[in-house]
Amino acid sequence: MKNFFLFLILSVFISNSVTAQGYTIKLYQVNVQVNKDASLDITETLDVNFTESHHGIFRMIPFKYKLAALPQGSEKANRQLESNGYAHVLIEDIQVKDWNFSVSNNGSYKEIKIGSKNKYVYGQQQYVIKYKLLNAINFFNDKSELYLNIIGDKWDTDIDSVVFSVSLYDALPAAPAYFTATGYTGSRENNTTTYWTDNKILQGSTTKTLHANQGLTVGIVFPKDFLIQQNYMLRGIYWLLLPLVVLVVMFLVWYKWGKDAKLTITTEFYPPENVSPSIAGYVINDKLDRRDLTALIPYWGAGGYLQVKETQTNALMGLIKNKEYEFIKLKDIPGSAMSFEKTLFNGIFKGGNNVALSSLKNVLYKTMDKAKKELEKEVNKAAFYVKKSRGMGCLFPILGVVLLIYGIIHLLITWGYPFWFPLSLIVSGIIIIGFGIFMAKKTPKGNELYKKLAGFKEFIQSVEKERLSLFLKEDQHYFDKVLPFAIVFNVADAWKDKLKGLEVPPPSWYIGSYNGFTTSMFLNSLDHSMNEMSRSFYSAPSSSGSSGGSWSSGGGGFSGGGFGGGGGGAW
Image (cartoon, helix red, strand yellow):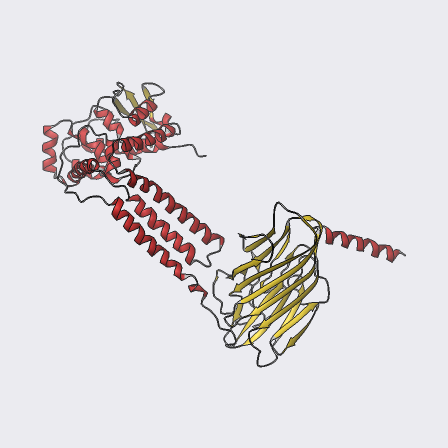
């Protein structure tokens, strides 16, 4: 009697655990077709009994496998798509008969979700899943082998019965070596009955229920050359034609709508009149850089609107020197100034007429963002560029970035295989971005301004010291006039080198912390201050499957040790 009650309690416990997921698999049929090209066509038929309402089932098939360590003396399989201790299989041509389904990558698994989120199912249901496996055969010097998890060990419910068959494209010349194993991963139990038909078809079925996380694995050895190993590295290489097509198309688009007219550049000794250095910085390279706005500081200084005062504090007995910069407002900029100039000037002096540069850190960035947008509008308003080319110049980089990011994500979620398609997207994205950067085409007005700016930039870079000395003597404000444009042209270092050893009148708008004025000290101090301004103005507050090994080369086969398998559940 005592044993009877114990048996009854265990039976209830097991029954409850079986139905805890709200479904069981009454019959799981798997048919595997082994083709001469070493591909596997697999059909799975699942008869499912839902004891609770669900939308359907999901099937998880691994495509990345961690390779187990080989036993000593074992031969390593010659596999394609293997790297860093992992083997990859390709899962293609997924079909589900008579059901809605979706396919996505979930970690190292291909997830097939079957059913509809707007519909529930109950009772007996049948699901037929078809797919193709590539690179799931192990090849050796004198043989090849199928090592396949017919039923994976990731199902979360019981499977009452499994019926399976492995059909070869042709009969084997002799009775094949094979094995079957059931149970948890690593088990060598064989709770199946199997038989061969004409050395061509292996059929079998389980003799016991497979509980949750138990599987069924089959291994078959084939003689050399019975299966032909494929070069999967070249699969999809035709996708490399895409970047070539994109390159040709983008070149034709650029040639028609983005190519600027050929211009004759003549040397200019002064910047163009009534042109803000910010506008000049934009037009010279067709884009907005940080320096285009920070260059307004010396520009305003030369105009008498502000001063920059440098102070130095010492710490640790003078071993550490800290520099601070103070902006001193002398007068308002005129009402005729461009909108971005007003925004930035008023933003700097929002807290008063004397403002420390350090107080603008993590504060002025919003003003800078607004000023950048206003500068873009001023450039559009001035009609320096053909509108259509500007639109394409904005659209193409965005499109290119989308392709680039999608390609990188695709490469990562598929673990790099197959990689020709995402690689083609990445290269195509880079090509589109590159042409997009150079797509902006200037109008005749824009070309006229560009000629003057390019000529002035060329002069700054190539002028000889003797000639520069004459300009400095003839015009005491020449340095002030050139400096903002040297900054936006990104040739300030070359300009500084030209001035070394020359007598440069100290600008009235910059008050240094040094004792006694020398050109070298002033230029070094100014260079440091401009770098600090650029940093502070823009500163913002920081806000798989397992195994995939072999069995015939050593160690023997066991449940869960092959390719395929995985598992699934209800949803």
